[in-house]
Length: 168
Length: 420
Image (cartoon, rainbow over all chains, first blue to last red; front, side, top):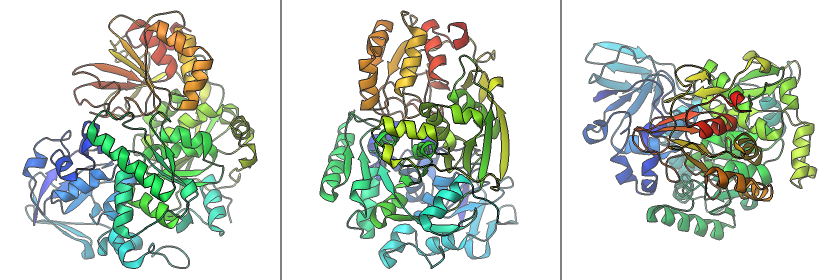
């Protein structure tokens, strides 16, 4: 379904959307040409729709810049898999309807053919012939993802996904 | 039932029912803000969501600080848009020269017990005011502005109990760098960091702000410090004494981890590129006498009046070493005015410094001191990632204002205890 692009630990938002392109934040198609440029400079030009970004620990650490998530999604990335995510980046992914999946990525290699089945909590590595399972997403996260992110959710419902006692 | 951590206390109070770590809750937002790098997207998202007005315009702030004054026309266009939004929605505007969002918010807006949501990761600095302050992305902040509330998971808390006294030449920056070096940059992910103990009780507010500010560098959701007599002193000094109230955790609160730190055992620390957790003492052979081309005294972390004063006390009468440049960006207009009145600009000018208008300056790599290829920067800021200061081929070392001053004098990384 999609090809794995392998990244290491601690991929910061500065590596994804560098400060030297600050002036392109209101011009996302141009900013997207530099996505992840300081982590590896072959990604932006070669990523294909449906591809999967695969990181290690603490993916998306650093600033709150949501542009980092938006441009990763904009170039066609279908999901980000990582051993762990930085907190703000994780929320930004969900709010933009981009699955951010916590899973052990050690067995996935660059170029592997991957499929992500959210409903079953599975990453299927067709190249390796293995399945990697991940725990079910929290209810609020699953709901926001299912509705395409926070913007779509608010447009449709006009409010946060809340219940009497909290969020669902 | 066990007692409350600071995070549980603040959120329980605001929601009006007892919340515990792990609960997911909708909470009212007492202060929301954006800056010029995140604000344009925030307001475009508000429009996309059909949120036509701010729930609390007088408690919603638009800061122009990251690219300020703008170095490019594209950024000037973002500023024009933000000013127009602030005008039409009746929001508070802090324009060019006002200062870094977190510093200005702290001086004039953040109150003990507030829930503060900012579209910038260092919003956590508000924790030094015992506010539940955390950074979020533009879309989350758009909702916080439009609906006056947000959802969040009540975090588990790591408690840092600090005893002893910081030695000569050792500051809160050295303490937080040591802690981040031990925890690593994801050691507090999703958690609150809470500070206590006699060393924190004695610590002045401008130093507490450093501890809260860099909570996010360990992945923390917030960096909380009780509201006490020092909090009251700070608020009174800012003409906001009536906003003070005491907020403290319960002694029987449940913590995910409790960590004891002996302040007396700490040394001046340096975080080496490319990560804030790559920390060694300033005496380590990997950094000692390392040539530095640019010394940067700036950012929400360490560019307050007391930081500039400390820098000047160390460097007083000396000039910056040949081959090293010194750039100073006061964190806010208030800081600028204090430094001006105290004669610090004269000391800095005599030293050969370039002094820039209040704002983020060189920290986020947009303008105001982008280093050249292969150059080393010693910076009082909070991040040293590849490319952070605008050039992926330069190297940033993080340290305290005292270490920055000693380094500026000698042109190589220098232990401030050698010159103090």
